[in-house]
Length: 248
Image: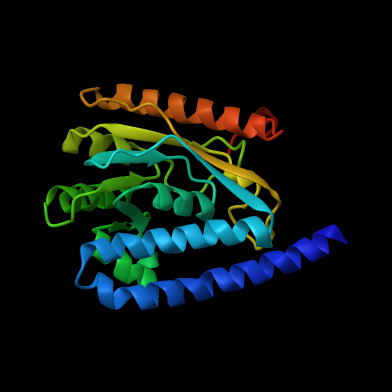
């Protein structure tokens, strides 16, 4: 009975979440087209709306640990579900994302992606995607802000191990920027796929900064160890043993 009721609540929550993307995004868009502050105000408003409604509609409380400095940095984050995207977006002063190109077909989302200078990539052509990603980031045409990348390339279920791809290291090397790692446990409550949401406390944690100047291999090793160790700790705090799941 609990599962059935929670599934219905999850469905209603999902519907309102996407409806409100169009409502909040649509209302904010005329202002965002002419005022950059309105761009980030609208993004933050939507992210916080989804987080707030998650608490009382499906029982997912959200907790953000650490802060993001308002400077040009690279943010490399663990990615388990759409919720970690929103929580990072809410906490980041001027977020812009490396995102899959198919998302640019979503009307409201695509407009804000363009306004923030987010970079769409085709994940099916890795070498070309990396070249295009670096070229767009280094062009100087995009607004200043914090560039968010998911170094594993896609959503990874809790406990599943997947390699960290070279794209994040290439950006780190080419831009010369510091990198802020982000750990999370949100996939325990909001899965990669499907509608069902499980009550609990979803946490993202901004970790100590990785300074610029490391070699590509040193950076990737440091990034993976930092994020995976902290993410496992967050999942264990929530009562999940990540070692019980086999390698992806």
